[in-house]
Image 1: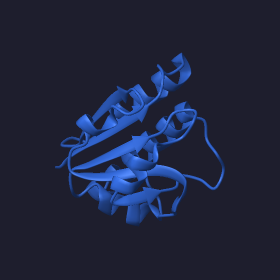
Image 2 (image 1 turned 90 degrees about the vertical axis):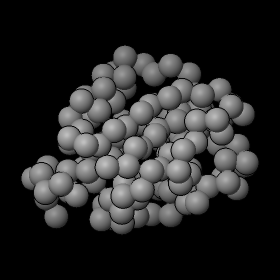
Image 3 (image 1 turned 135 degrees about the vertical axis):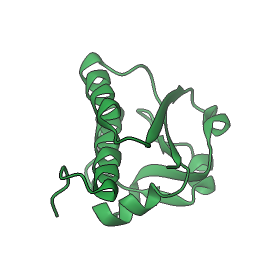
Image 4 (image 1 turned 60 degrees about the vertical axis):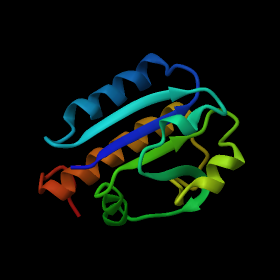
Length: 132
């Protein structure tokens, strides 16, 4: 399985978000490796491996099945901090992805992203977590 990367341009997560992220990472199906990294603004590019997907409220909406297709190749998801993402991240991205039409705080966006990665991975492996 391809390696997946989540790069968060933000400060340390609050305890509740860290616990939720750790729980989804722990549950990940066998063969799925997801690395989480915190990056300072302007320092995200050294962490990018494979296809770059930038999370942005003006990005594209995907269904769970469409999102699952992103997991078939090495992908780096970049989440902005409180001030969003730098324009250079958006420009370099293969895809701008919207998790919600609502603006999410960066800690919650990380939890939602990891839950969606977990959901998509279980869908691809035939696990019953995702019920269509």
